[in-house]
Image 1 (cartoon, rainbow, N blue to C red):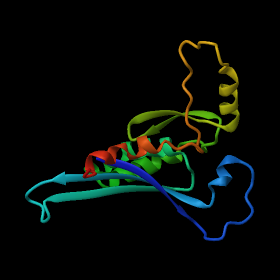
Image 2 (image 1 turned 120 degrees about the vertical axis):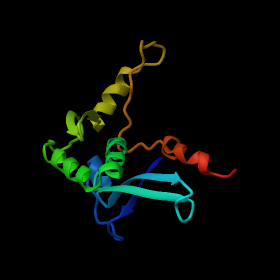
Image 3 (image 1 turned 30 degrees about the horizontal axis):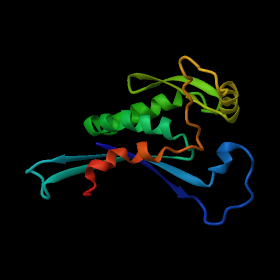
Length: 162
């Protein structure tokens, strides 16, 4: 199984941008993909391949990547029923906004997550003074503007013929 994400521009001409974080990325759609390849001699080309793609307007990479990792195996196993149950779960969720923590149902599980805001990031950095040892060091959640390309591409490394 391989997971990755991508973004696609909504419009070619970008108009005047606003200052808040989510509007910076409002000109894109975000795709979160779960790809499964199963080897087997019974398949015409030796492999069976399936992809599950979730499209959204929000750049919450960690959140939607986790959602795809929960939904895709259920979809591959149960089909459309899994999508219908997930959609019912989504209708019970509060609107997702930066700076809030959530505990929400998804396909028989409870997801807990926090969407960081710019204010959260500033407060965490202000507490980290050079020369002081923090025990344990606070966990800084990546904001929507920071992308860790290595962890995103790490599942693809075994498939690269180097």
